[in-house]
Image (cartoon, rainbow, N blue to C red; front, side, top):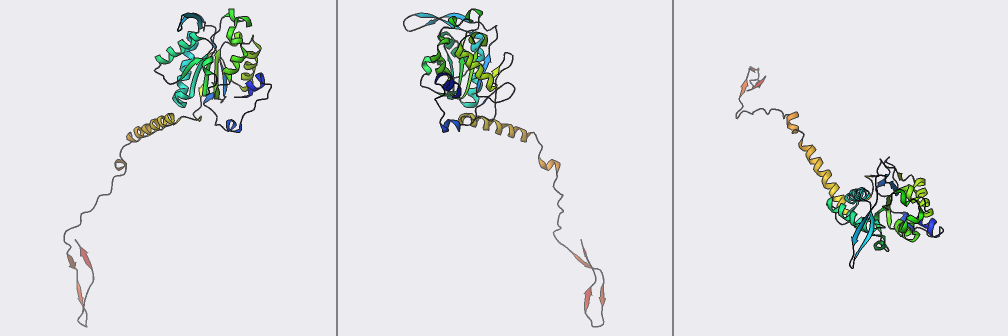
Length: 275
């Protein structure tokens, strides 16, 4: 997780502590199933940004939002939260209007507890999983001068260094690659095998670490499935009926068949018959 920001912004002088290297692998995987901690999920050309009015404490301002990208981002964030716990997930964006849209999408999915905010609110904080929504996808944004706050290398440094075990960036690579820092990040994702093209989507590995609550839910679901499966089988006695017990008569009579007399006068039974 530290390799790109260290190389791109600190000349490779920032190293990972042993405790971070010993962290278990996360849940994120490429659509093909290969696990990868850093993914770039390409947004199609049909995901167009819009200008929205965002109310502030003193007035309203104009900001950009990408509704379809927000829906895609919120859906993936909810899936990760179900496995890793909502408090382990953050969804961030450079645009306040997109933050509003992301919150709305998560509410519609009845998902709560996920941190949703701008990059300014994320400084100094970390989460296990971070999703970044870059919003811009129109041809008018192809020039670096049109990228605005996305071209700020300090904000990009903050954005890509908030995640501990998994990072997903959603955006249009054709728009972002005009900036040298974004071009380097896209190349980094390609080297890791983390480019998720449109028409594909990230997957979650079942072997990744889970929160205590998520692990408890998974155990409960597994236990309930086992109970239902057990109840579908018939009783073992129906397959292997117990042997019939023979009734023992209350009294046993012994019938001496023949008694042979011997010369010395003693009597010896030859056979017994039980009834």
